[in-house]
Image 1 (tube, one colour):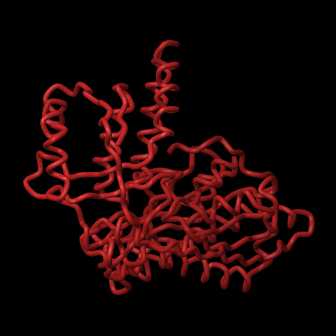
Image 2: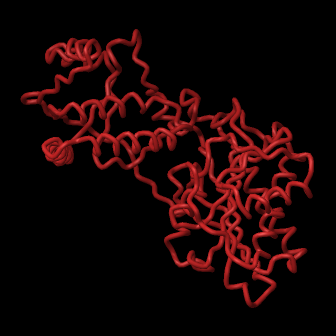
Image 3: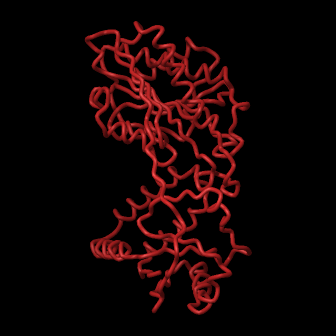
Length: 374
């Protein structure tokens, strides 16, 4: 593997390697943090540093392969090699990334004194990168790339008022989860076990279906059009919602006045976190809707807006509101099953979201997009 002599890139590579074994459920939060930190570093760079940084990026683009080996400070090799057999689930990274057993590559680590270098770097955090002279990598890949088309599921309830029916409110939830676990599970060592995702996000999907059923039975309450969407691929990077906002939609994004997202609404325990709201008319609408629902506390203590498919709509400058009943010990684990769902609480959250949608549908003016706190 070719390495660089740039401290920023070396440290970033080390962070990325460490993060590869972290809980995948916090992936978007980590990416947001790294993006903000990277932007700060770039702002603080002088002209010479920026030129050096760009040169390093160009050099990194020529890297042919990345070998990942367990850290020498670990008593045992912590690689979950069995997971490749029971749940092979690779992303495209633009280059081969190979996890190598430490005991098999140890002779080369000794020859190149890489363990000693790693310990020195750990002591003073100074980079000691160098090219590995005459190093080559030959490997055989036993993987098949199976690509499948996944689809958003969309239902449309035309607005009852011809004058405002051209405008729409999107009510959405992602219907995918993490399958057999693996890298997207908080317990990757249990790869191969079914992760049903009852809360994340069968609860949101079922809520959208029942909200659609209720809206159809009371269509006169919705002068604007309602678009019910269950999104594919949220866990893999908001794929379905990104596709929706970028593709020709039943109602153009420019005519979409708001988006209500329900992600993990199955463990209410008498409360729901609602994010994406600032003070103003929309919050007043929410609190009025909450009075009708009853027995449901409105909180704003969760991870904030932009952590689910609402993010795609925020990026398109559509006011987006997310409903969320909180993390729990079964998050992205095999234990997220139906018997732990608070069905009455989920019903109250769905009723709250639909009551808010009715008020947004009746507004004489569109809610203003003021950005959302992420």
